[in-house]
Image 1 (cartoon, rainbow, N blue to C red):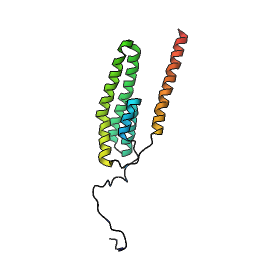
Image 2 (cartoon, rainbow, N blue to C red):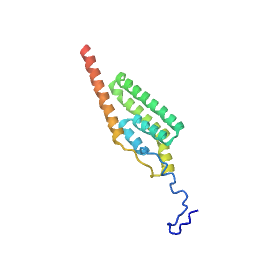
Image 3 (cartoon, rainbow, N blue to C red):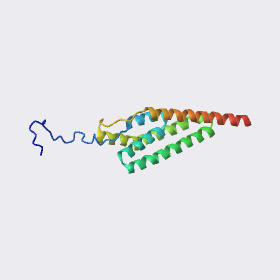
Length: 158
């Protein structure tokens, strides 16, 4: 017991975000899900996976890893459909991708949003968005460049 009579008074406050100091730096899971509308569920799933790892929840990180693999499979299926479906059926691919995004949001993204809100509230260190967004843009540009180069090589053969 501290008997310093000149010390400031101390209060025992329960439930006042005592975990704030233990909160790891995280990307805002709601913002990550929102950015997935632009960059695909691969983007949000990767960030949610990294958040679960940072929080030390390996079981949920494994679940997020499965969603990440499913997102890559969806991307490949979408590419195949776009190549082999007639142009007038292009809407099928968009509906397919949107349905997957909605399923991912309710099954994986929304639970992380609720978990972070319940455990840390708005009181956790935020990770920056520059690197993930710049990386996503870089991947998109590199993918488009690769597709253009492939199209040029195939066109030169014909």
